[in-house]
Image 1 (tube, rainbow, N blue to C red):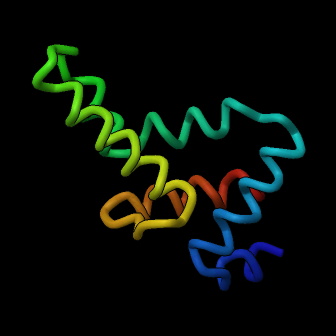
Image 2 (image 1 turned 45 degrees about the horizontal axis):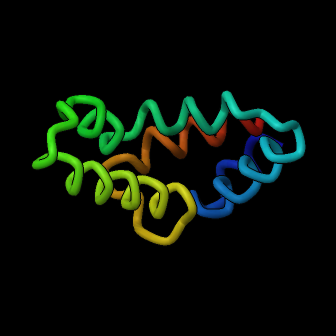
Length: 89
């Protein structure tokens, strides 16, 4: 089973991990992913002023699009791939 998972693309791993987490209603899994993405640290570091709100919204949209497979994972891919594999094992 481990070798089979290693052969899957990151997107296939994401889909399987998301299905498993959805069935288990494992909100913690999704929260853990978000906490470890680079965009979330950018959002957390903003001060909430009007000048940063637009940037925050853009970052949140980008983060969600990445998680849902609508945009490439970029630098976050190795970490997220490892998290997907760990979760599925």
